[in-house]
Amino acid sequence: MKNIAVLVYDLTVEYNIVVTDGITEFFRDKDDVHVIISTTSTPHNERFQYEYQYWTAVELLKSKNIDAAIVITNTYFNAISLEELTKSLECLLPIPIISVSNPLALPGNHYTTVACDLAYEQIVEHLIKKHNKTKIAFMTAALTLSPESEEREKAFRAAMKKHGLEVNDDWIYDGDFTPKSAYDCFKERFKKGDKLPFEAILCANDYMAAGCVSIFSELGISIPGDVIVFGFDNAEVATNCDPMLSTISQSVAMTGYKAAELVYSLLCGKETPEKAVIQSFPMFRQSCGCIPKTVKDKGYLDVDGKLCESSALQMSGLKLFSNSINDMATIFHLLTMTDTVPRLHEFFNTVVNNLNVVHIGMLAMCIYDEPIVLSPQEDFEMPDKARLLWLIDNDAKIQNNYYEKGGIEFSPKEEILPGRLEDCVTGNYYVLPIFLQSENYGYLVCRFPTNNYPVYTIFLKILVNAFVHSYVFSKKEEERAILAEKNQTLNFESKTDELTKLFNRRGFYEYGQQLLDVSVAAGQSGSVFFCDLDGLKTINDTYGHEIGDLAIKTEAKVLRAAFRDSDLIGRLSGDEFGVVAPCLPARKVDVIRERF
Image (cartoon, rainbow, N blue to C red; front, side, top):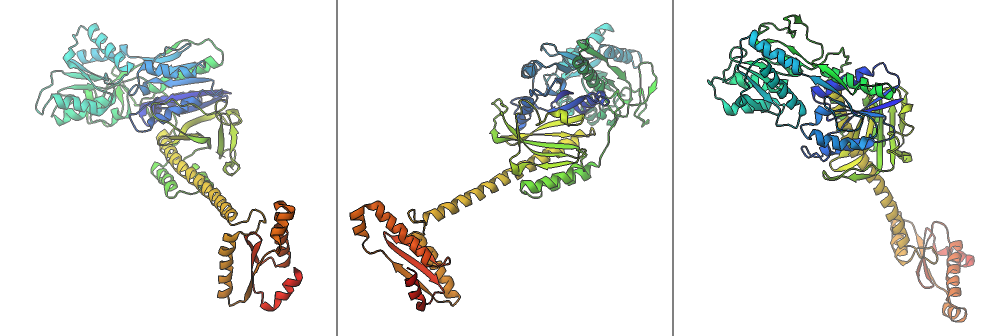
């Protein structure tokens, strides 16, 4: 069995989802592979509070279970540079590390890359010959740390040079891959009624192109009449934009597919090329005027002017399948888990009932012995021990709650789950740290059959938060029960005479008074006795205090034998004892004397 980790910044962004789809698509028919996906964020990340906790999953991927890793590098560059990412991934060596879209300066690294030079040459040629446009601007993503942005700008400059056009550096605008960065950029520079100095603008991605469309419309600038806009990626926003964006498809899913192909070849011991190159290509739509705005079909024209159908999945290039679920109904079901904070065994039943709703086939919850408090500045160190608390596998019909037995102990440095992943069916698995604010409690592993990653992301985050609250509540309840038992024991010991094991003076008066009060309330009679030893001082003086103590213990033994189990006996001091005997009338005193 081959266990292949996939590291991605998050799974809520279209690009990240489609690349991951490409990876899992390659392994769809492989019965000797587990794909283990982890959304890691970046180490020491403080952009969002506690986001740094996600990187702790990387420590788990150092487990001896993992045979190779695929890193979707582009997803990290809003928060970290390529050099910093490379340094952070050194901890996974010596396993093979395959990177998507960018080479990593690591031993044995293989990677996929997208060639965009030809696509930009074709677009510039198209603008000149088809639309008679020569004044061309470019919007970079230089405000990020993305090598992709640099490559696209470089390819744009080379294309302009090849067609004999000068690049006007005043028309090079910087963004950060978001629509807002493009919107703000032009809102600051132009007012309504202004004429743009350029005739076309090529953007480093579709989201910035959509931002340009938005602000240009506000400024009264017609697209494509006054300016032509091009994007890059063929993201879903490209066909949802009005007008629909002309763009460049880099076959995003194929970059993941090819990365999976590389890693599988390596693990099978085959000779494997260092890189796989995917060619990007232009898609001409409404924002360059090649397709009329009245046309609602989401197709495009290729470089030969042929009308092509848009792929069912944006960014794709692969035929991918998705078993969709009713997201709103699902999310409602998930939120019901947070209605109360139950004990963990009750919460377990709630989770079992919810897994079928979100199509999660298996769920395992693993907890460290003690939560690890982690700050953004600290490096996380995986504990030597973890405990499997829950294992739910709908396919195998397993619903095991090990919490009350203390869990199944194992080493997460050796294996992700006790018994190794080989015991689990092949498929796509997801690893997520279990944390709440700065406290890291462990991690979960789950298997899901569909690619509805955003819903899984929401579900698992709700599950993690609810689990932590339930786990902490259960622990506190246990601690309270133990403390109450200890207090009860201490309370009893504080009212017990050490020598005779009877009640001491404090216990006798407290519990004796309660017994009297109950008897009076019930209208019952009774007797109270006080007694002592004659000659204890002589015994102590003649035989010593040990024998004196023996005499006192013998007196206690006599009292226990003489009185009933329901009578309360206490040592008041020295050789003085008291007895509360409810329902014992005065006429029975002689009987007690005979017993003595």
